[in-house]
Length: 302
Length: 231
Image 1 (tube, helix red, strand yellow):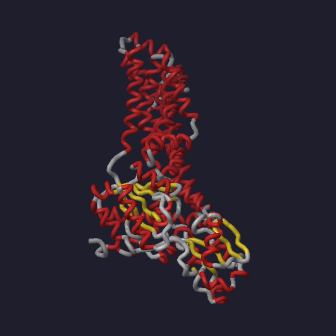
Image 2 (cartoon, one colour):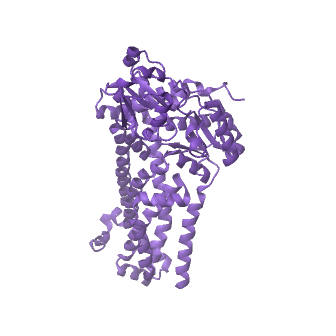
Image 3 (spheres, one colour):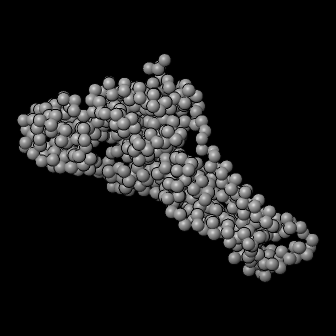
C-alpha cells in the first residue's frame, strides 16, 4: 500500500519531468516582435529556409521587445531573430553609446555581437526603420521642403506631432534636436506613434515625426524630409543568428546572406502597407514577395 | 479597405489568407490535442488508482484543484521561466489544466458504479484486473470521455493565450488584430475559428462517447434496471 503510493508519485513526477526536458533540440527557431515588419521579415526568413532546405522551422511570434528577443536567444529558446536594428542594439543589448554613422554603427554592432555573445549580426536587409520628419505633399510643395533644415524658416508657424517617448529621450530626443538643428516648432504635441500619420494626412498637424518604414507613408503620399545633419542614429535592420546554429546548419548562413540588400525602405513601406491596410497576413505578404522574386535564386550568396 | 464594412472585410480576409488561417488552425488543434492526450495517459491510470486506494484521492485531487486555480496567463508565465518560450510550454500548460477534469471524472466514474455489479463479477471468479477491464472501465467510459471533452474545450482556450509566448495558433491572429489600427475583422477571423473548433471537438467527442459506451450503444438490449446507471 505505502509502496504503491510511492510508485504512483514517482511515476507521475517522472512523467511531468520527461515532458519538460524535450525543450532543447536542433530545430531552427525564429523570434519576432509584435510589429508587422518583424512578422513579415520573420516569415520571409522562414520561407527562404524552407525553400532551400528540408529543415523544420518554428516561429516564436509576438515577443514584447528586442530585449525579450535578446534574452530568448541567450536562453536558447530561439536561434535566429528576424529583425534587429543597429541603433536599438547598440544602446540596448550592447550597452554602448549611440553612433551616428550608419556604417560605423553596423561594424561596431557586428564586432561586439561576435565577441560578447557569439552571435552573427548580418548585413542589413537594405531598409532602415528610423525616426524621420514627414509632411504632407501639399505642405512640402508650399514651402519647398526637402531637408529638415528647410523647416527652419517656417518652423515658428508649424505644429508638430511627435512620439510620446521621443519627447524625453536622452541623446536623440526633442531637447537634443532643438540644440542640434537650432530651431523650435510653434507647438509640439506628444502623441501615440500610430496616430501621427493620420494627423498629418488630416491636416491637424503640419509636420510629424514617424517611422520611415510605416506603410501609411506611401498610402498617404507623405514626404519624408532628409535628416541632413544626421541627427537621428541609424536603425538599419538585419537578421541575427547564433554561431552555434550557423555551425550546425551552414546553409542557413548562405540563405540569410541572400537576403542582404534585397528589401529597400520603400519596399518595406509597401509590404507593411499590404499587411496593415489590406488585411493580408504577414506570412502571405512574405510569400508573395518571395514568389515575385523567385526566392532570390541565383542572386547573391556564394 | 475603408469602404468595406467589418463583415465584408472578414470575408475578404479569409479569401486572401485562407491557407494561413488553416495552418494556424491545425497548429492550434495539435497543441491542444497533444496536451490533453498526455494528460489522459497520466490522468486515467491515476484516476483508477485513487479510486482503488481511497486515501490517496484527497491528495491527488487537491493538487489538481490547486493547479486549476492558477490563472492561464500566470501559468504560462511561470512555465515560461522554467521551460522557455514556444509550443512545448503551452503543451505542458494544457497538460496541467487537463489533469483535474480527467482524473476527477475517472475517479467519480469508477466510484459510482453499482457495487452489486462488481460484486457479481468477483462472485463469478473474475480477477481484479478482469473486473477493471470488463466491468468498471466500460461502464465509466462515458464519464471519462465527458472529462476529456471538458479538458479539450479548456485546452483550446488556453492555447489561444499561448500566442503570447510565441506558440502560434489562432491566438496569433487575434493578437495581430488587437495591434492593427482597424482590426475588428482580423480579431473575428481568429476568434470565430477558435470557437468553432471548440464546438466541433465537443460534438465529435460526444459522438465517440455514444459509439463506445456499451450501455448507450445497446440501449434496447439492456434491462431497465441497468439503464439507471447512465448518470
